[in-house]
Length: 301
Image (tube, rainbow, N blue to C red; front, top):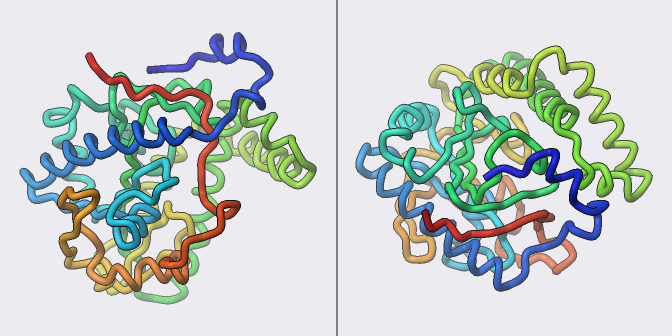
């Protein structure tokens, strides 16, 4: 489903329509995401593809045996080899029920990583509102790439990677401006200044589309097999997510809400690098949540 710019213009002045999902909506969202996870894992097992639960979802698996109670997404990560394999068989195996947005795909991309979106659902946040892509409930799928063994080469590649990542999404912000994001970012002076700077960067790089920049970033971060790997599109960027390959592989099996999934070989080291003491439950005002514009998980077709 899409939320058009015409529809955005018909909505009221935005800020009072941004909201957190209710407990009831979160429960429905979790149920839908679990259906998606089952479908994806079934296909992946058929083709010997082994995506792992990652990010906050990996914390949920360890600390809560599934979703963090207030979490509103599901994160997965995957080796570049398996990522490419999944992209090739996606339309055949999952195309009837899901969209796949990913850098370099004909269907386009609304980010520098892949998103598997459940057809017939609606999930619009303040970043995606008004864009030309489907706004559906989705699972993020992030490729894991090798990094150069040489430290100088690693630093150079990491710097360029981070520039491309920042620039590509800045172009997306610039090309897809909407009142929800603008009103939210202009709510205080600090975020207003950041927003203006981000739009300026987006304007400077807008000689190419965001889709092309996402594809350039995705191609650039790939590398030949070495001792170390990173998730260049992750929350801590290229260098912050760099770990020895043994931390990720070989993968191990785990359970997420009773569903068989894969996890990093050393999940403690992986999570400690990202979050520090990941077993400590954060206070309510520090919990990560996303502001929502519209939500509907009814995917009957």
